[in-house]
Image 1 (tube, rainbow, N blue to C red):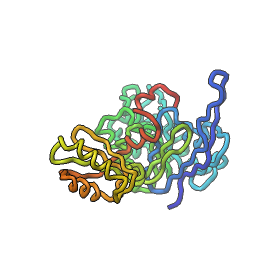
Image 2 (image 1 turned 90 degrees about the vertical axis):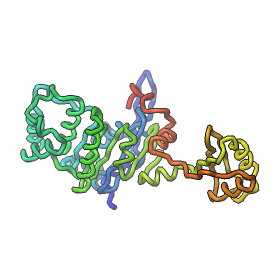
Image 3 (image 1 turned 135 degrees about the horizontal axis):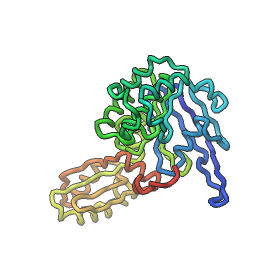
Image 4 (image 1 turned 30 degrees about the vertical axis):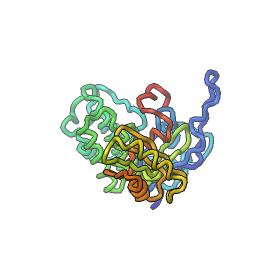
Length: 324
């Protein structure tokens, strides 16, 4: 597939008398293929928003290469700007304007046909409130209006920073459907969000950034598989047999068919076994010791656990208030 967005070795350094030199981006790489929803993930302070602002010409980079739709930016940003829609951080609107007036002004300023205004209001579910003033809108409704403004130009590339902010579960589901409909119509979507379960549901591929560097990238299934660790959850007929089973597996590991890289961790009602070449080795080894398996299953990982492991964070909320 053709790359809609390419970033190679991007660097951004900030200097201040108080904090000294800080590398917000330290050789960051990213590639987004056409026709995808691509998740862009990183904890607060990782360089995620700096990347988006640099890409859109709002911040100057100190080094590296960027391209949108095959054109180097920021040099050719004026040429591709009409094909890019973006929400970065929280957009602000005039509170006494209606949603219709707000979008009409934006359409006029951007040379967009006025027919796009009712079309995008309908797309984001605001057609019934188009004549209401923005100050009467909830946070979720203002977020929908922001998405509508980014869709006015019928962009080939749509960049959304936290579009689900303030939305209830039904609104999040509607946003997910909208993203899929846009991709089906030919738009490529780059989606930044802290709702990692939603990213896993909607995105075809992801890039994870931490401390200004890429720590993982690729199709979601491949990223999950690469960090699953090949673990097995082992349950026995009797919980009381778990200590004996742990001892048998550890003792057999150095000389066993699976080699010496096995690790075994005992939990309340199961064992977690890593480093096993063939799952059948576990059942054979335990059966030889008169210990019988009632369940043998691969350890499932989700995007949240992979994200937390790769970025060294415990939760996204722990980073609240830090500079993005």
